Length: 186
Image: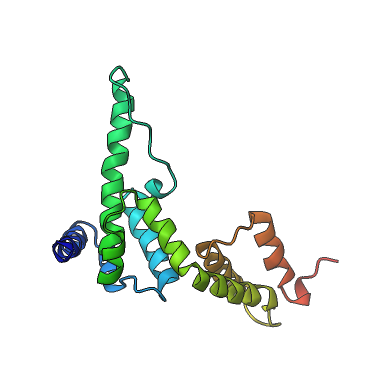
């Protein structure tokens, strides 16, 4: 039965790819473990395009009572539908072994939490490397500012994907402090 479910999830990704070309990214980059950070970034892109990323950040609504307004029942049904779609994208984009471990989980955000716990240590070391790159990068005199800022933005985006939390002001401060001395305002 598990083989059948695995096949159905793979079929679901192929079917979704025909509706959403971004799903091909997930089909071409299945989660195997060590590629968790890249896979997660691609998954977020696809779930955002499919308009179901909100499922990962919003808890399941309570089951509406029999006298609940229609809007409440509709909200619950939308959550259920979008959760199923997100689960199809998530599970369909995993290796067969990982599919078997997660196929019985009912909530997409629980699957993602479990994967983070399984592969999060890789994220920690990748985050440390990105932080080191970010704080040690200094603009070389004569280098175009645009190129330097794009490099710094790459580090900041990578840190964001890896779960580092920094506010926008800190981003700006880090980039400004990395500029060459010719940009010193004193």
